[in-house]
Length: 454
Ligand code: UDX
Image (cartoon, rainbow, N blue to C red; front, side):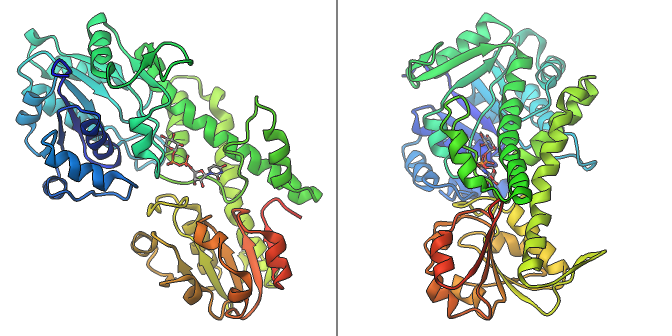
């Protein structure tokens, strides 16, 4: 309706672009802001800067409908919005642990300086707990004092590949607020769009809380997910030592609804732009707060996750009959096909991708590594140029002594092991995502190894 607040999204990266486009689709009058003129030109021309299913169509439709535009003009942005969402990146700091808040500081400062009426600034970026308070001080310092500009925090929970659906149909909305005005503003912004409720039995549960809790919800959720994955990968290690099968174990414990069967897929572990970076930043922040001990287990979660990568290297060496020296296995003279480079299927994202890390390890050990990924080759080549990239599965596996499936793309799962068997030099396969039908591959004469399986 016309009473709905007008919204802006500052930062048109993965988070901001997705939100801006989806909020226009939900009927809001949206302006997306970025300092990067190239990005803004592309978005206004209907070009999505990221690979996310469904987003392209929504961008074109909402630009045409006049509900959505993008700008590099901060004064125009300040003028447009009743509610401004801060969606800029918070990358890992150069020291490898904490989060770099310089983009948050820059965007909030310039927005605050250009505001001409009362508005609500809502943080969405993933940040260390305490950032909302700091943003509130920044806003107080840089916005005209008489306007009474306020701050709130509302974390997001987007999964790559499902981001459109996650915004259009969130499983909860969390808001951290300090005043009734901010609370009312956010309620007005969401009601009529989402069927809000304070309980689980309605469409979208709304959790209204304080700044610190709202900030913590995001990192706690990601820490839990990372822990669940490392838990099952720790069980995989024990299975490897004892002869158990982690896939059956996961299935069996997952039937307990208190545990649940999701996010219990043992394999090469987690990567991507969020989980690895977030658990490290969370530990660093807890340390600063004097609560470091409480999150010490996240260090183990990280280590378990990273150990899966060296496990694949050693499995490869074992299958190829190579012994590991003090410097690790020597794979020189072998040719290895790596299927998968992205951190999970259905994305082109190779940031902190376990698959690409393993490909690099195999290469470092001397193997001639040929990589194929349905969508990630371009990004992978930029990140790790020293590998050989191929245009298809057949090209990658041709003449290989070993095939390593490192990302569970449907194309790999559906590949015919007999057909591939005729292309390779040796029928050996490491299924690092436990995604192949092991019986089928074994029948086709392959020596098959999964992770955490006998
Ligand atoms: C994640 C969170 O899911 C999302 O809520 C948050 O907002 C951002 O971080 P995303 O990075 O898109 O989303 O990836 P996700 O689908 O969660 O997978 C993360 C990693 O865990 C992938 O590398 C995936 O391969 C791995 N994973 C996931 C497993 O190894 N096993 C599993 O059972 C599930």
